[in-house]
Amino acid sequence: AYHEAVELRALVHDWEPSHALVCGSNGMDATRQIIHGAAALLCSGGLIALEVDSRRAIDVTGLVASNGAFTNVQLYQDLTGRDRFVLAKRA
Image (cartoon, rainbow, N blue to C red; front, side, top):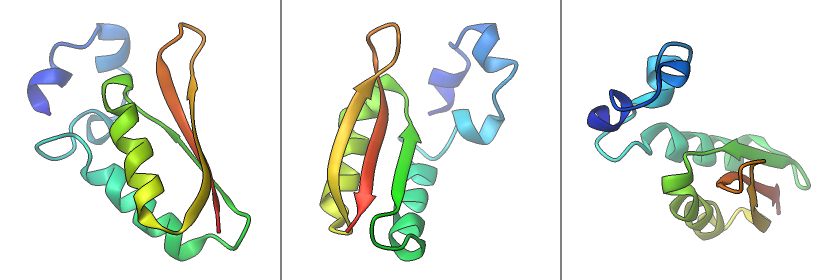
């Protein structure tokens, strides 16, 4: 959401593209599109790897798992211990 983007550190706010920081009312519109697109485009065994906002990591993991097109959905932490990466294989 926009109010979250303006609160980010300059290191993030000044370098990330705006559409990566503000995407729909809950910040997940592009993520939903990526998951849906990957389900349609990836061959069986293909990998989807998403870097996500740690505040939404559980939600994104759930979206990938509930899509039905992916297996082995895993959530990984970054070097600071924050939930950051969602990986899964195309069924």
